[in-house]
Length: 445
Image (spheres, rainbow, N blue to C red):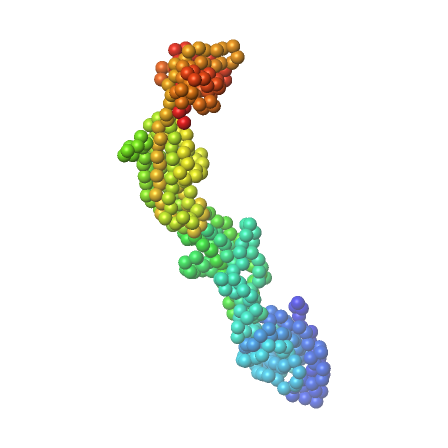
């Protein structure tokens, strides 16, 4: 853009016989382009017979125009005349500041004259456009619903320009968990005033200064929107960056949101069966920061456990996890898992944003069924195998698990290798036969 408008000799701009009667000739052809809102300096000098100058501008839409010419020498009298692209009758004329309302979009010419030719002076003149619709060319992001998304930690960049009808931009930062955000807006080429506002998912607006990052705390789940808006005459190229600290999805849960605070499930006998069960009813809700419940259940002995999760909302992504510690794994509802005489944990968790359901959790313990067998012979020739006194007549099956027990404690395990009518051969894992006075427990499952 030019930083200076060339002076036009009076003879080129005005009729030779009457220098103040109005422009004449081809003065428009010598006019220089103007940028709306920018100052254009000019030196009026009687020695060079430089008494007038002209510039032209494009109005992007309908609106009002404010024309200003400021002379360094306040004794000089400066007049302004605004013309349409064609014609020699001014749309408006007068001294600075000259307010021209209700203009239509298009090209206009500004004629600036020193009406006191004997007084030399420097003049800065400019045209400030006030569009009827400052967001007429802003695009979809002029509203929060059309906000551009900040993705992958990258900056969202753009331009706001009040006079060119691009007043407002919105960018959004998805925060599915809520939390806090540090938002930084940087300007380049700032002219006038540009306002920045953070808009929470609740609709609450927080204005902030761009001199330092804005710390926006306690943001509920949803989109944090940043509005960049040029005020009257304002312009800026901008970049928006943000750092997010997600809220804890269990921030409003009780102590049982962590394994260390797990609720105890007390097994009790089921009437008419040899099983024991426990039951819990509760609700998990990801968006309400109550996503996880932990439970602890003590197994009375070896056996199997069934974990069953029934949801009030069957379509919800709410799952059950099972294990001995934090490394729990998802279990399919109703399927049995092997357990030892130990404490186990069940975690019920809503998987993601928008997921929630009330639930009933039921765990049922099935005691192990063993066939107790006496060791008849220990074979140490090929690894380790034992012959026991129970076989197919005692419901022993090939391939089932077996444990070698000494003094009530399991010392080694193995598998039933061969089954006879009244005896069986058990292959001991690892080939370790360093035991005596042992018995064998064969799984009855």
